[in-house]
Length: 327
Ligand code: 5GP
Ligand code: MN
Image (cartoon, helix red, strand yellow):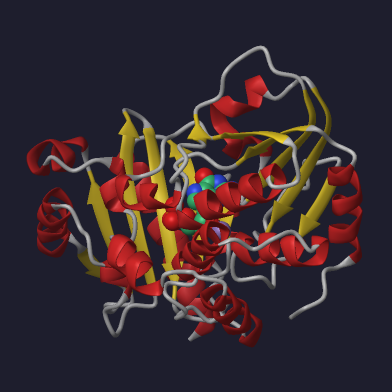
């Protein structure tokens, strides 16, 4: 196992002096965020701390299996915390509505693997070489010698599996496999997790996917694929936001495509974009940052204001330039 860095040890010292803790994560939480939040919550509880596990949004149905004790909750007022720990959240903004409920605290710790992390904590442990925040929580639990229960192992395995695209993205390292192997040894139920996460699509998602295949567009010599999700797509298929996770991978996987982009109409004049790059020199983290967002080199996102077609034109222009500069 990789040794925990000094910052992680410092974080452990601070945790050991705390008794009331709140573990928070980013809006529209994914498997890495939920798994990391829950694993850390359970580990701290095992040490006798009082722990809240808050997120603005609920866990998507297919990730609820991790929360066997119903710990993943929306925030509530009237709490004082010795410590707030944010996991997998690249900026303070990404905590969404939770931010207003964690003001009364002694310290804020920021544990994350996004290179675009804005270092908003009092202590920041940012490991951009880590493929998931789950691996960082694993390192922390191991360094502290806290028990790695079966339930914690399930949460961390799910975190790692989802953020590495089932161990496919180049961010997956030897350490990722060693960690995942140890989690299986500790009882992570690989069959159950894969069944829940990858083999249990809702019918509404499949209907949405049909539309995706009908509607996506290609440009720049088939090297850019893009797709719009409009309110009417949700209305016509019965799909919800939770059904959109991983949709972009279907257009990313087309052989000549170097960059995939998903545009989603959030409200009139606000578009969410998701970007995926398959070209090592086309860094979509840098591109998303130009639009006020961020993420990783190969996967990023942003929220952009403006007319939908203007947003599309601006973004496609930047993507074209990024590709032309590399070829
Ligand atoms: P997704 O496309 O799956 O929503 O996000 C891909 C990656 O980009 C994730 O690592 C996510 O944290 C990051 N990301 C998505 N949207 C935003 C955003 O609005 N701001 C920032 N800073 N990062 C984002
Ligand atoms: Mn993550």
